[in-house]
Every structure is written in C-alpha cells, then in structure tokens.
Amino acid sequence: MSSTDRTDRVVAIVGGALLALYVAQARLDLEIPALAALQRDEGYKVITGSLLAGYLLYQTLMGRRRIYDQVGVVFWHKLAGALAPLLLYLHATHFAYGYLILLTGLYLGTAGLGLLHKLALRQRTLYTWWLIIHLATACTLVVLSGYHAIIALAYE
Image (cartoon, rainbow, N blue to C red; front, side, top):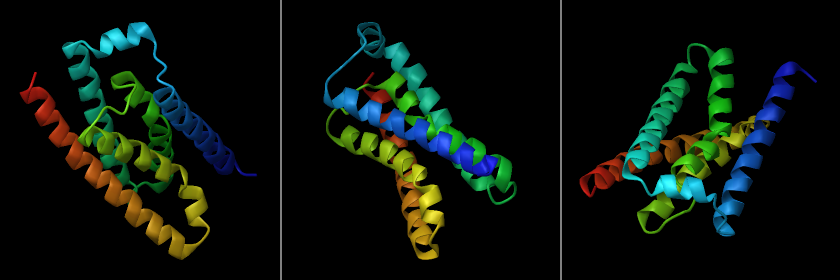
C-alpha cells in the first residue's frame, strides 16, 4: 500500500467519523453547555460564520488550483474537507429549520461526497457523475451560504 493510499484512508476515516459524530449528536440533541452558550452570542456567530466563509473560499480556491498542482493541493483539499463537520460544529450543533436545513445538508453532503472520491476514481463514468454532483453541491453551497450571511447580518 502506497503512502497516498494510507493518507487517503486516514482522511476518509477521520472525515467519515466526524460526519457521523456530527449527525449523531444533532439527532440525539447532545450539546456541550459552554459551546451552546457561545453559539447564542451574536459576536461568536459572526466570528465562526466568517471562519466558515473563509473555509469555503479556501476550498473553492484549492479546488480550482488542482489543475496546476494536483499532488500537493489535492491532499490539503481532502484534509480540509474531512475537517468540515468540525468547523460546522463550532458554528452550529443542530440542523435548525427552514433553508438552514438545506444549507446544513448541502455542507455535510458536499463533505460526504468528497469522502467518496477514491471510490469514484475506480470507474470513469462514476467519477464523471461524482465530480459533477460534488461541484454542483459545492457551488450551491457557496451561493446559499452567501444568502445566509446576508440574512443573518441583516436581522442582527
């Protein structure tokens, strides 16, 4: 097994575990009281929302840079994608309601799709569809995140 395969496996395990833990804690309504108190603070919401916006920008730029530096950039793009649920957890521990359910679903779904990268690579047709869906969800996520930021700041 090559070091790339081991790295991909570790990233997939970490990402899958964080994704499963986020969904499980949200479904079971578990919370850390200190974090829940922070998440009710408007300043904290702005800071963690800005962190998430920066993360989305980073991932978007890394995805674009893959054309020029496939080996180095792909690793950091995958690793950041695997850590996506952790960043969301700092901002919001629950799915909320309305369009925020869609936003959370897109965020976690895009990260989950990213974890399937290695499996999709095994078959050309599957990879093509995987890439189209991953890019479509990522682009939709960026647009809906921008909408959320505008709405959240307007009603603050």
